[in-house]
Length: 215
Image (cartoon, rainbow, N blue to C red; front, side, top):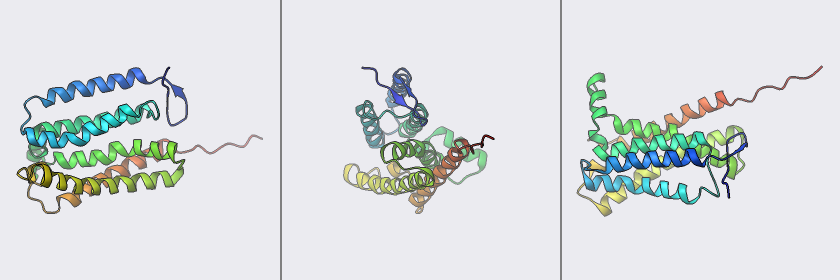
């Protein structure tokens, strides 16, 4: 049976080849980055939620295939997360380059990924609300942004609990606070801003065109 995914306009199409390609590409990148990570314990903790997300997406594909834009965005976020898990977020080389180039006080890669969490995942979330709950218009946008902010706060709490229960000795290494007592709040703010920007862009690109009256 051919599994057809519907984009936001409701057009049926078989997206399996592209989705399988994205899954394969992510799998190869994930395996490559799983080889000799900076800290194996931190890598394991960081990948718990990522592996869970991929498993859920595969298990629910027949019932709820996302549109291709959503799969592209989800894959992009997962790749960024895999990079952070390999190096630990506080030690990603690109982050150190940004730190030196912009004369920052800390490695900003973790903040970039939290921004990406909101910017890249709010669109798939909005798609779920539109197609499953029938939410439309500004409500779909507002609820999507609100859920991203709520999820961001929830994951900050979960990360702290996991760090304490599974590997307390990792402490700030896993949480990536880099000595900032306001790190969790700033991470949530970054995700919130990212989701706002994506929703603003989405509303601009998919703004309904006024119908012209025929005379």
